[in-house]
Image (cartoon, rainbow over all chains, first blue to last red; front, side, top):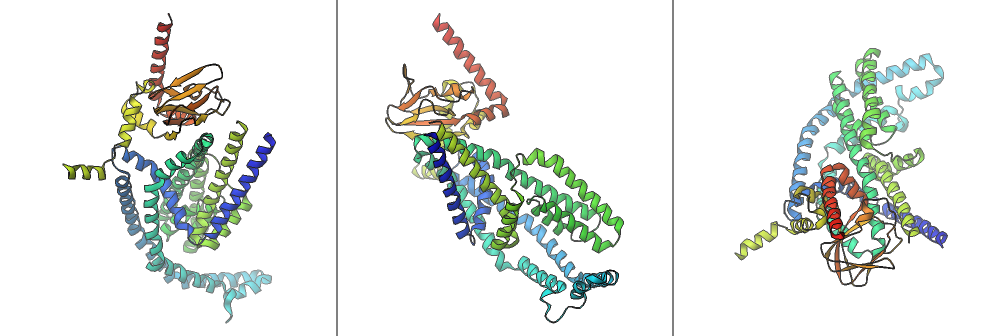
Length: 350
Length: 152
């Protein structure tokens, strides 16, 4: 009897999983704003509930918080965007210098290690048909990047959509939860309540921890690079902070970009060493003190799943998609595990 | 007068205050102050049960502490029956112990509205705000004392 039930749980869970991934895949073009809005909603709801305790209607609390967040966000953006666009402009101006540097280095390498010549030839003498030209690739990527960041048109959907979706999510989330519980048959109530509790427990810590960690890495990296007078400190800091969400790869990106920037600017091993040591100290503090303390339970995916998540995210939503995909899939995986465990427990206990 | 009421209704929502006042009127939470009750309210789920609907069965995993907001609930463990009225709790013995299963079946005698809390939520609440746990302890020991006196 109980064996049948466990099998039933297994089959239902697998079907649910497929259904979930099907829905995600089919809606992949539009789903990113909803994911971001969902995240913000999850983080903000406790604050909204606290404000409501003062005796206000939900829409008052939600409006107040949304306006506050928009204000804070606008403040940060107006502070950062000029700095970032300046840094990108400076990069574009200096780019011919770097191009020259790379070409010099590759001719050097070609002299010392002749058998690499055919690769470096692509760099030093880009042909007419230069689809493989490394420098042309970099140049074209730069163009699209600057266009993206400065283009008002491509960012508007995000800027408008995300706050709107978040606003309505915040407004309705409580009602959805209450109606769901009323609607649930009595024997599933305990399952649902314990499921919510465990999801909150595992994922709340994970999400908040990641955000705190990203801020830490971003700010400290920017400070380090800034104090060594490395250019592009803010961009590299922001990128390091964002990419920190990806395990293993994120910190590697941070280190490599920091070191590369120092190397290209100073061309001296000592400076690179200093920056490397500083960044490494930061990574150690992060790994040994901050991560265990704040991020809590390890919700990481295996390497294969992670690579799949990265590529899927990149395909769906570019860089933003890549960043969101890893935590999104980690969260889904954990929800699925908790769901199956709880379902099995509750069935076996009846 | 009507306009003022209308404006108040748009901006003000007293449901939460009413819930908290109700919690305050419960025996078990008598020693708690308003801010502690507010924290309690954050973890409360509500559900309405129709007449004859079963809330939990004997032998089911015990994770809920239930408060009757309205209506009547009957607890039946095969031998004895007990009726729980408005403002009473049931399921509290599982919340503070490690008992894993319910020892009785709870059925609604009439359409009832219940507040309930999840056992682990209560535990975390008490760990974080030790005053809540201590105040409940005061209350429980008072109840024990009264029961002792009654039995003499």
